[in-house]
Image 1 (tube, rainbow, N blue to C red):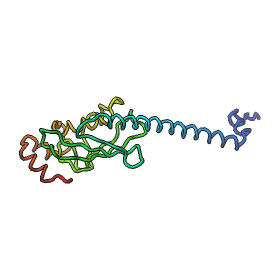
Image 2: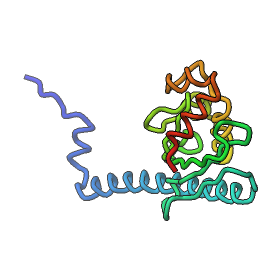
Image 3: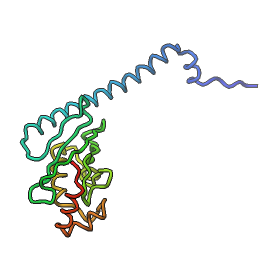
Image 4: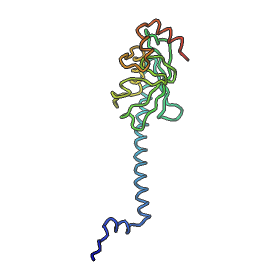
Length: 184
């Protein structure tokens, strides 16, 4: 009768110091942690640069700042553009930046209720640059300007709010409804 020899892997695992095995596992976890911290550091650096760019830009009617001391959550404001039904109205938005920013789009939504064909009742925005057309070249400033532009020029081909989309062609009725329901 012939006996099978134990596998080399099995023998190696028997000969490994359990403390050393635990240490190598801990080192692997620590490596992931430091990699995650490096990612967060580069995202933080990018967001700090974007904040400076936005502050120095002097763009009228848009602003954004980190919410308290969390650089990954911002509050933005947009003033309705002149010559649109949104003129004179100011909207607050929230920005949530993922760890993969700028290669992943931030999650942006209206905090102030916004009656608009491309904004749902939860404040989520249907805007291609926040979805499938996102690029790492976009920044907070370009997002704010795009949303400000979207207010006056909605995409009625893909509405999130069908009531607003149906009313859009009658600008007087739309403006009346908008101003009657606007909450500061």
